[in-house]
Amino acid sequence: MCLSLSYSMQGYSLFKMEQNQLVRWGCMGVFCVFTFMYLYFYQGDIVAVGQHILSQGQTHYNRTIGAIVVTALLAVLQTVVFRITKLEKRAHALTYFPSLLLLTFISSVGSRADVDFSFGAWPWAGPLCLVGFALLVWVAKEVEPYEPDASSGWFGRVVWVNLMLLCLQFVLVGCLSNHDEVFHYRMRMEKLIMKEKYGDALKVGKRALAADSSLTMLRAHALAAQGLLPERFFDYPVVGGAKALRIDHTTVRTVLLPDSVVTLLADSSQYARDYKLMELLLDRKLGAFAEELHKSYTDSILPKIYGEALLQYYYSSGKPFATGQNGAMEADFRDFNEMRMATADERERYNNLKRVYGNTYWFYFRYGK
Image 1 (tube, rainbow, N blue to C red):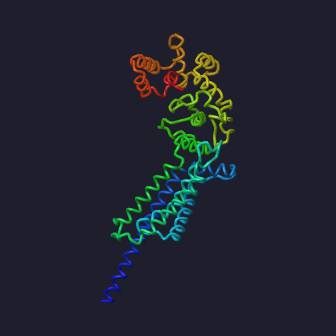
Image 2: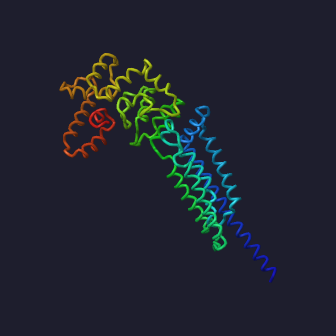
Image 3: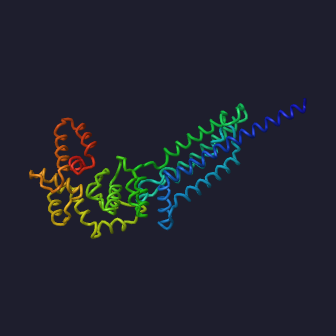
C-alpha cells in the first residue's frame, strides 16, 4: 500500500511538472512571437526615433537586429521575474507584466518627439504600475495553494487561462503605446526615402485617408524624385496647401530624414519648376499658373494634373477649352461639373465626386484644404 501511494505521489508530481512546463513554454513562445512581430512590423520605426533622438543621431536602429535583441532581453527579464515570484498555475502570465511594461515604454515615444521628446506619462506611471504588479503577485501567491488542479495538455484550463491573460496584456501594450497612424507613416517613409526606395515609400499608407502637412511633403518629395509629382500628387490626401511642399519646422518637418535631402531636391533645377507650378495650384492661383506654364513648359503633352488645372482655368475664366489634351480629359471634366450641378445635397455631392474624381485637381480646387 505504501508502494502504491509512493507511485501515486510520483505520478502526481510528474503531472504537475508537465503541466507547469507546458504553461511556461507555451507562454514564452507566444510572448516571443508577439514581441518580435510587434517590434519588427509595427513599432520598429518608433523605437528608431527614440534611439535617434537620444543618441543625437550618432546611432541608427536596425529593425531586424533590434527586434531580436529586445525580444531576447525581455524574455530574460521575464525569467528573472519568474525566479523571484515563482508564480505558477493560473497567474503565471503575470510574470510577463514587467517585460510588457518595458516594451510599452520604449514604443511610446511621442509624435512630437523632434520638438518635445517624451515617453508620455510612463516615467511616473510605470513605477505605479509596478507597485500594482507587486500587489497582484502577493494576492496570486496567497491564492495559489488553494487553486484546483486542472487537466494537462494544450486543452487544459490552466494553459488557456494563462494565454488569455497574456493576450489581454498584449492588447494593453497596443493601446498604450504610440498608435498615431500618421506618425507611423511618416517615420516609415523617412527611413525608406533615406535609402532612396521611393516606390516603397509611396506605398506607405496609400489607402489611408489620414494625413498631415509633413506626410504630404514626404509624398511630394518621393513623387518628384520619380518624376511623378505632376501626375500622381492628388492620388493621396493633401493637407496644408502650398506650404506643405517645403519644410518650415513648424507644421512641416522631418525627424530622421535630414532637411537637406528635401530642400536640395525641391530647389534643384530639375525639379524646381514642378514645385513652383504645384505651389501655384495648391494656392489656387490659376492665372499665375497658366502664365508660368506657358512660359516654362515646352513639352507637347502636359502631365495629368497640369492638364486638369488648365481645364479648370479655362472653365473658371469663361474661356473655351483649348488645352491640346485628349478629348477624354475634357469629357471627364464636363462630367465632373455635371455631377456637381446635379446633386443639391452638399454631403451627397461631395461623396459622389470624391468617389469618382477624388484624385483630380478639379476635386482639390473645389474641396481641398
